[in-house]
View 1 (cartoon, rainbow, N blue to C red):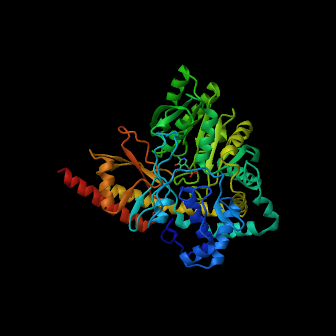
View 2 (view 1 turned 180 degrees about the vertical axis):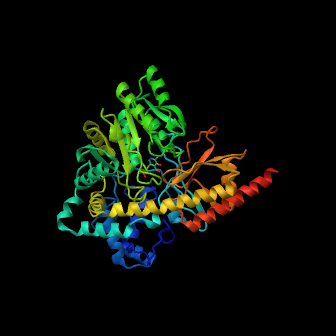
View 3 (view 1 turned 90 degrees about the horizontal axis):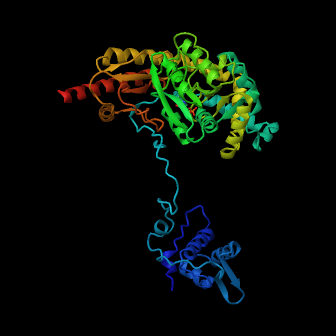
Length: 502
Ligand SMILES: Cc1ncc(COP(=O)(O)O)c(C=O)c1O
């Protein structure tokens, strides 16, 4: 006899009704072969006495089992496990740890699948209490206009005409947002685009991915800087492409290197973070921009322009993107609101010649039918009302102040350890080591002092060692007190490393 009294565990405080709990546990007994096909379940009276529950509860559970097809009721004979169920190998009767050993999720798959070794990032880590983080250069979520978003979202969701946005919509994204973005990009970046050229994506990352999948076949060549935004490298490799590295100096990627490559083989594209090269933060110079555009026309390749932080430029008016001077239809321009508003607002855009946007929309559809129409409409209204623009200005002012403070403290207190250029924009400083230290050692020691360097979004920098022994230190997400404290902790870290080396 199965020891129902010990193996069935009902929790009267649970929000799951008792009859469902009983039904589910009997199903588990059937699934693990303890109750084989055609076996008889105990009578309802016996079961209710044994388990100390009302008989009606047992009857409801048995009825549910019949409805779901696990059992069959035979008038006057009782309830039997469905005779058509397959016979399974009997596993031990669950004991004391009923939930743990019967319902445990297996952590190792019982099937084989492809391991993609090049996709080796870890998940984002939230800082423990008291820890200060120099991230990769992300916005300060604490100033995100979340109240404004919530208000606008509520308005959009409440309006009855917007019920249509609860249905399947355009794979290109909300029309009003594309119109607002076309106007915004034309106004702020000198683009000459139209809503038809815009595909709304879930952040810049999706734009990079779609471009990579369309540009690169097996072995297609994508030219990237050495060093480069690591997540983009992974996308290009994942899409079957081969990375061809070119130099990066104080004027950005060296376009002569692109030309050299083009003379000997066909390339699919050049990936460029023109505004502030990732990770070194330098701006691609005007003459290299013109050179790259000329080359793209001459050799027929795409320029994937990832303009992830265009809105944050502190010194002078930013140089307009390559996309603004593209006369050959060679630039795929990618950006997002994730850096202006907050990384969790997964709304970005890809601007490209219409045939490319159409193809990208078809590709996007197979993995993500559409974006989030209500959020997109919300953002469209916020653009219309100038709220995004106002927030962007406010953030720019704040980050400018933070950059100045961060760089002045770094120069004053840590100059003997680190070398860096004050970035003209963006949210991070590219910090290089002067001495014979290692970043691994510094990061480990800094943690002991309550400072984490990197590891905020799960991707470390492009792991190219000398001549690029640098790391990004984000300043935008820290307020001025936190910056002072963080620099103090870094100073302590470097002093203790220096003493150890003596
Ligand atoms: C250079 C660069 N491109 C793209 C992205 C991806 O941004 P998003 O959050 O818009 O997908 C990032 C994120 O940090 C980035 O640094």
